[in-house]
Length: 260
Image (cartoon, rainbow, N blue to C red):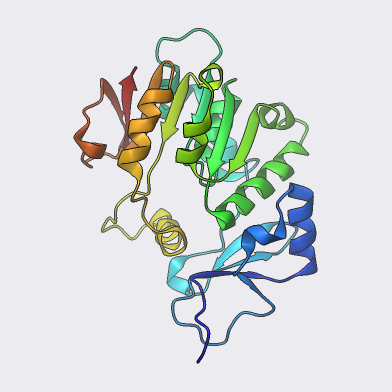
């Protein structure tokens, strides 16, 4: 009987294992996903985690899922946005009317783009990511950014946690509760075929949908000191039918703000 291949694998490269050691990630975090070579014919295999061109990337096995994904906070769109953070909706949603420095917990960090923007805005940010492959991409990107003179101070305001956000919030002592909690569940499918859609399709194939978003929001509302910010597609329903206090809307997404 042939052993089934998971939806994603990690190439067992010495360079990848060395990088994980540098990042403080134990190899057994990828237990069950290590493969010496990519299978020639593996139905259901969506992506390969690998070391390539001095960074960790997640490479789709199908061309229609787009280019390999890696985290780069210094260049491209993320680098540009971090230089003009004051114009970003996530920064406005988190800040509200506060004038004091805020502590922010991003429960669904993903590739860390919103978290990096918040740290660039001066907030103390904790990024929580439960999927091991995505966490590897995130930590690799932060490591490279921390080696840059200009970005080092931003990275110094970021902490990371690999694991369940629900478990993390549940064990937090009241003194450690953050001012603001951000939740960005996996967006539902949309009919567009833009480049960003390819990345989201790859994410869904690897990570799956966030079935526990309603429970996570309920707990976040109990742990946040000031507000909970939820990112949603612009026309999507409220999570769990909970109506927010107010919203910030963009062209394709919105931020639901719950004041606690």
